[in-house]
Length: 328
Image (cartoon, rainbow, N blue to C red; front, side):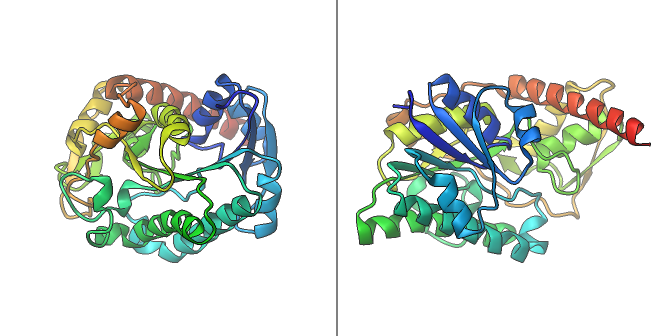
């Protein structure tokens, strides 16, 4: 399906975007990447041949330019952040997210894009020990993720609205679990749990203080795996029929932190702070639908994924250290 097809990846320089661009190029696509980052940064991350636009996709005219003459669109636009984002920076998240989602999908509709992948989120689900796709609307998202979760729900509804009124059946939807991998945010103040822990351990923090008591359960998926199954979903999933992308397995934050610590030298001590928020106590994605429709299986184990992520983080920290030495 992808060979010689023109494909836009909006947000193509992030954790999922970089491996997605590589996966599409491997499948023979002619890829256009749009990002707020400068072109030199994008080409430093992705050495393959691709077209690049630096655009602000909160602006409708930029969205029209981005989607022009494309066959498929992947919308990876997002604002990543740690647990506190859903409680402290809600307007800074909600307003641009709604603009991203609405403007890009509307532009794709006007251009009659053949297929459009919208990336939902595990944070949109109401509290449950296992998240099945059909249960999304059986309650509000967890309080600390209420506004980010609702924003993603609105994005999914946009696709359904265009179909119901105009018959535009391009939109496919995936809902990834907690994604980790290279090219993630390494700022300990904003990074999510895995990159934040890796960075703090690699920079010598010992003991490492971690929010919560470690009992919270999460479902993790490696970024390159997400990219692979997104390509499969755009090709095989029915319109406006969400599909989870995760491992289907729950790991406690304690288990994940200990796994990371075991791969770092020297191995740091872990210190838990049960008085700090740790988010929803349990988030696991049911994978039956993905297995049936996509033939889904876990391509990268947690150990392999963490090893690759730590290696990338080490290289980034070395680059940052050298840059600081030069600047000073």
